[in-house]
Image (cartoon, rainbow, N blue to C red; front, side, top):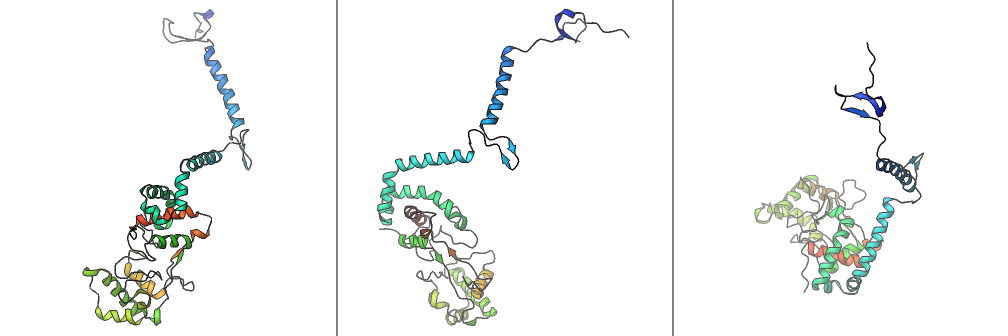
Length: 300
């Protein structure tokens, strides 16, 4: 077998030829200077970036870099700048909300609109987990987007609820009601709540009157906002469930807020006015927001 010879030995080629005429061949020239400079600059940039920013993982942590930069610190700086801008931009509006009453804020179109817009974030951060992002209520928590108020829909009442919190209470097995009577009473309450579409048994009302329900919920079953007792005549349930009958029976038998009963219903709202979570001005904003969310008592 004959040895392959380079027909152009002085050309600085690699000896690879791709056609019979040797027109297409691989040369061994150096890359352009601009290419090499870009490569060296890139290598230097990688080293500088590695040393300046946190990159290399160490045992039990990572290299923090000469800049000591993190995304969290950058976010906190941005938040500080944003808050400083807001404080300067809306200082007069914030002062007006702090100084004016809730009624004055609601009757002032500009202040009301500002309070509602700024309260959306507050509501999402502090209220949506229980009451839903739009006030629709999550399982086991009240709906705020209707006009049914356990403790009243006036501005002052809503503000008191947010500031001081609420703790629902209902005795279990009032006057020793039996399981069978609880089942009958639940059917009566649910059918009564349907209004014209319901079919309550008039004889069952004797259970409602004789087992102490009337003391809190009243003879007309409309409830008592001073006590936070629910309106039982409107088919709006504090503890809404897929099986509403079973939920009502559970409430009758095990009550609300009875710590000694593991099956009791829980109805607790935190007191934001006694915490460091939100301040007094933010409580005003939330009050205005919740008031309009559920079509609260009209301010005149």
